Length: 469
Image (cartoon, rainbow, N blue to C red; front, top):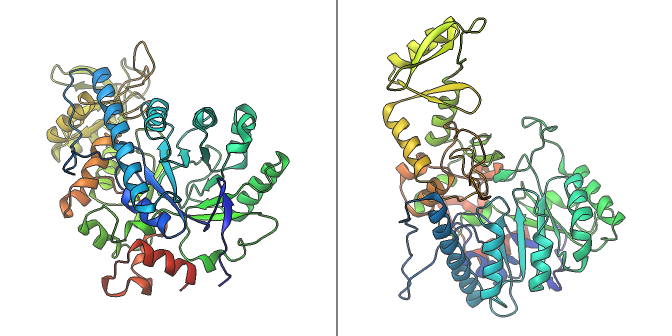
């Protein structure tokens, strides 16, 4: 394998190994601190991260306010305190010279307020801000205000071009790097555009080469590109390393740090990673953000798939083939469906799926009464964890604090499930919550490094990445 040399990133020489930020509460200050201590760039998730009492006990994120707007303020306070707690832990472990980044989602509820307050209160703790899930135009303004480097996450040269021309050209000196996140292989939310086929992955090399050419046109010859998604062994990327056409390149590891001794996920989750097979990670569009996302295909995902398949279109008045009356809800208010769909409804009801829930697209989905109550309860308990949520119809913009659409029961409360899977160990939790993962997670089971259930420390993982197989 080629020698892996340090590169210049964010004003410092570091190994070209970046820890990928995974929220909620999965990329912690502990993992980030140890990754930075090993010579790379440590990244903690600032997405509703955990905070602690003076004695070190985790503070559960319980919401007491009656309205969504008030709960949203509670969420922002939790997020600020949690990010500061993780930043301090990372800095304590990594030391003063460690490179520590905070990862945020631009579509996170209150994202700009949260990262601004964190940087104000945590001066000197954070070296860089990594941000994706949206088009974070204001990221450069925040970085300039606090003199920290910024790292936008994009999935095409076109997206970077738009960000540069609108905002980033005014803060070029603080652009520490550009994260290219493969929209087909990365875990979490994926930046697939409407013109890209989710079942036809493209080779990342031409896409990253196009990004470099676009960056060179802007004078960004030496600004690193950080390859994220699908990275496992660096020898598989040897033609990228020291490639004069690509320029300086670093590699981001998001999935592999899950299976380390310092990783905060439960032991059951870690053991599950060792059993995944190719194809077990499912690219779906159930997220309340509206983005595609990659997650383990467990009972949670299977229920969402089935829920979306038990769906028929309806009309408020008889129209064409939609002439068969059907009563919805306790008052049996009439809508009209096709005779064929009415037969399907009868079959679903015979199986216990008797609750019909309306979607924003003039369709009905059919669920059990227990699932229907759970969906309505989760929608009612919304705390505004996203800037706009299709599941609850929340939007953070005044005065309505609504996206103007009917809440969509085909999605789910992402804050609830990510908090649960991060903090509740056991098979039931893993099967009934969202488990984000990169598509290469199946390689845990076939990689000899993890033979006999071996779980490395972060230091051991980084050393193994540097030395190869």
